[in-house]
Every structure is written in C-alpha cells, then in structure tokens.
Amino acid sequence: MKKTKEWYIRRELRFNDGDKILQDEVIQTMELITSDLRKTNLFLKIEVYPIYLFEETGGVRFKVVLQENWYIYPSVIFEISDPDFNVWWNEHNRSLKRVNYGLGLNHVNFTGVRDQFKFKLQGGYLRKLQFLYNRPALFSNSKFGLYSALNYIEHKEIPIQIKNNKAVYKKIGDTKIYFNKEVVLGLNYKQNKFWNYTFEVHYFNNKLNKQLAVEYPDYLLTGDHLQNFSLGIATASFFDMDHILRPTRGLQLNWAIKKAGLLKQEDLNYFNFVQSIKACKKLFNHCYIQTNITGELALVRKKKPLNIYKGYDYNDTGISGYEFYSIDGLDFIYNHNEFRYFIGSYTTDFFKRVLRINSFLIKTDLDLSLQVNTAYVNDPFYFQSNYLTNKILFSLGPGLNFTINEVFQFNLNYSVNHLKEDGIYFHTRKAF
Image (tube, rainbow, N blue to C red; front, side):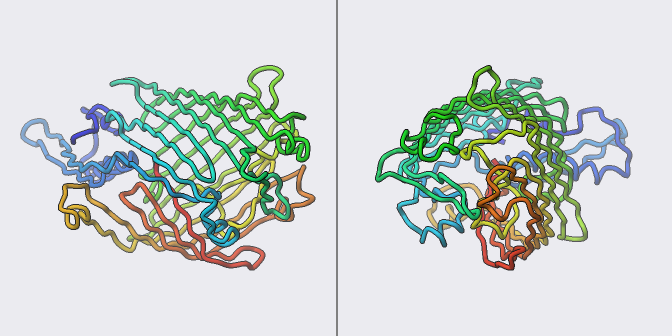
C-alpha cells in the first residue's frame, strides 16, 4: 500500500491478533475480512489467503493483498442544476442555461485514514463555494473523529411553490434572489467495529429577495426575508454490510434525531425522528436481494417553510417512477426492494494503453436489477394543491446498474408507477 495507513485498516477489521476461531470457520473468516475491507471503498482488489501454522502454534495467519483504488478525483464541473436528470432532460428541454460549471477536487483518503477533503468552486446556474473535511479517526487507537463543512450558494431561480406536485420556478431577470450560507461542525465516535455515533451542529443563514418574501410568505415562513436557525443532528448507526452501492450481504441500521432551534428565539423550531433499516442477502449464485425501509416522523407538528419541506428523495434508494414530481410532507415512509443479478466485471488500464502513461485500473461491474417500491408521504399543510401526498405510491420495473471502481454507480431503470405512467429514468450515486 502506498497511501492507506496499516493501523486504519486494522481498525476496520472485526478480528484482532490472538482471536480464536474454529478450523471450519477459516473460509467464513476470509469472507468477513474481505467484507470489512470492501466496505471502506479504498481498495480495488482484495485477496485474503490463510497461512496455517500447525508446527508453530497450531493456528492460522491471514495474508491480505490489497490494490488501492483511486483516491483523488479532480473534476471540471459541468452538471445540471435540477435535482433529477430526467426532469432536466424532459421538462427543461436540456437547457444549457440550467447547467453549472466550475472546478472541484475530492480526495477520499487525504492522509491515509479514509479522511475526505472536498473543495468546489462553481458558476453558471448556481454559484457555489463548498469546502468539506471529514476525518473518521484523529489518530491511532482513537475512537473519535471530526467533521467540518462550509457551503455558500447564490440562486437566480428557485422553486418557489409546489403545485400538482410540480415545482413552480421563479426568477427576476438575472438578479440573484436567494442566498444560502451553512456552517457545519461534527464529532463522531466509533464504539466498536459496527457501532458509530455522530453529533453535528449546522448553522443556516438564508436570505430571500424582499419582494418574493412578501409575495410568497410560505417559502421562509418567518414574516421577513431572512431565515436564521441552528440544527442539531444526533445519529446512532450499526453497519455490517460489505458495500454501500452494491452490497452482497449484511445489515445496516440508522436512528437519528433532528432538532432545529437549539437556541431561544430562532426562526425555526422542529424536532424529527428518522429510522432506516437496510439489509442484503444472497439468494443464489450471483443473485442478491436488497431491501430498505426508511421513515421520518415530525414530533413537533407545526407548519414548516417550503424551502426545507422535503419528503423522500432519489439520492439513495428512492422510489423510481415519480422523478417528474415533488412529493414533500411532514412525515414519510418508503420501502425499496431490489433484486440484483451480477452479470460480470471488466477491468482495464485505459489510460496506460491509450495515453501511454501510468495510471490506475478502471473496473466496471454490471448488474441487472428489478425494483419494487412503495411509499407514503403525509402532508397536513400543503396537500390541497398536491394530489400525490397522503396516499400510497407504488412503482416497479427492471434496470441496469453500472458501477465504476465501486465508487460511482449509474442506474438506468424502466419504471411504471401507480398512475400507469412509465418511462426510462437515469440516476447516479456515489459511495462518498
């Protein structure tokens, strides 16, 4: 290994020197070591070999051979600003005016302990400045890590209302009408190989054009054009899956509480509870089933401003087939089920063959999938003009998943929803 520190690798393994296993558990132990290393997303190739020490101790030692993945992802930003590719392609006619451009850098193993450093400077439809640093372990044998982030965004156009579950966009020429500032500080605690706890404090400073604040009072719901509030998020998570994007086994549990208005006389005061359960199991050779149940409950039953009134999304395992709709509410629950069949893997050293320069390998995994999804979004405040809330949503359909270096995933799905609307939808996901 050139970058990743050995002590961090040992920190992620569920086994320690001197642990006792039965002789018939050697194969299972090798699989679990591979699983623990795979879920870090730091390695492109993992090989585990047993070395039997019958003459010395009667035990076994495991030799682990690792090939490191790409860690540095510099980027020339050219991306759509809409929350979903399908909306931009169909409803905004692939308009280049809704494209963001700029420069970015994402290092996912900055000092060799899976610490992420991210920087983005962006112009175009959205002007954005972003900085992030996440260090899961301060030093060797440390159970604590730190997280910090800074986000600044300028908007020339915003979804000022939701009518018929469609975003109604508003702009005033080329004038900047909405500004977001966010500062984040966080602390994480790793109790053991599986349990992690985090606490984050976010501070938001949002400013809306004064004319729009008067015309659309529900957007900020403060009676003014300014919105300032703090948000605390405490999370407990159990993670025993072998991968984020395409797991082959394991279980993931998450509980979180979100409290807005940590100080008195802040613009917002809400208290939400979030729980999710994700599991994956091998059915037979190359075939897996993955299920995810996620729900959020508002413990403070007050009206929320539209700028933070969100339901489920499509970033992780959202319900495909409703990409052209905005379905927001105070509470929600959804269930995502995916049957996945692994077709094959292709590895190439493209840059070395084509450009004659040393490079890292590019590995592509291809999976067939079948999704069956349900969801329910409860909206007690804005439901009069949104007919998809307060009812059961359903979709299903096949798809193709392309996973690059186990870090980036591209999903192409055909879905049919409960309205009998069908279409082909494109999504992207990242492991970091």
